[in-house]
Length: 287
Image (cartoon, rainbow, N blue to C red; front, side, top):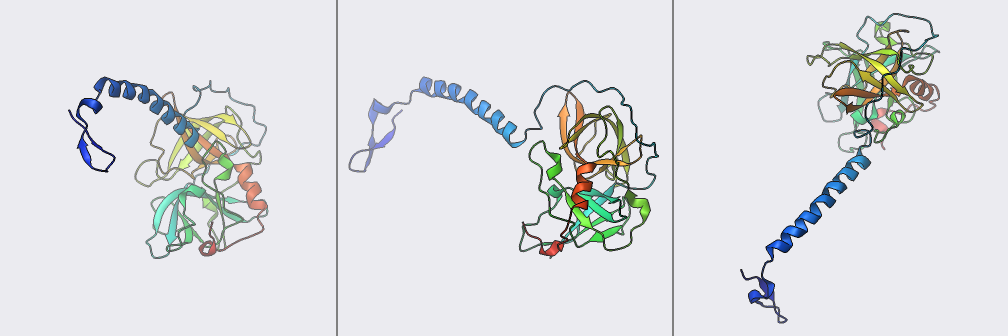
């Protein structure tokens, strides 16, 4: 095989056997480059999504002693569908959300930040609404934020991912959750995830799990069963002991054939809501 090369005059000419293709050299180069590419891919995966790859599943903690008062689980549809209204576009369902009542009686809407875009000047976000599963009417429509906007989670800190919404209209109390005064569940505690799309038909489904670990920035819950978690972000976790909301589902981490869900602890959400001093219009907010 002959290759074409350029002479000093800039014209292509036959190089004869001087640049004969060395197939053994090429194959050796490919074999050396392949492991480097694989290693680079793994490193990139760890950097971009550090919670997807981790240590083996830890033993489940034993049931804890809970000193908080015992309560009943909610009977209403407290896991709500989140809807986004962008200017010039039809309403579309995005992540889930829920409602909480603060100690002063104010009701706050809670959803994840990663479900919305606040950066499109041609189609700015106008409103966020929450709807009960299977219903066509909205439970509440929000046009104001409560405090500053969070940001989509990229690491292990779940508390950065939130959108809090100010309610300016009466809301049926059957849709509203009470925050757990402990601020988070305890390791080994049984909890229930109220998802409005878990059955694939838009109806509420209650999924159970056990709290695996708790920190100031994240709660991890080991779910009892395998299911498709797509679209469940924003669903509330409720303590089976107190009957009160303990956090918001944010992330998923499959391990050992099981599902771990990352949760924004309710104590952080309440603190952010209570400390809010600004209530900007959603349509005017830009990142």
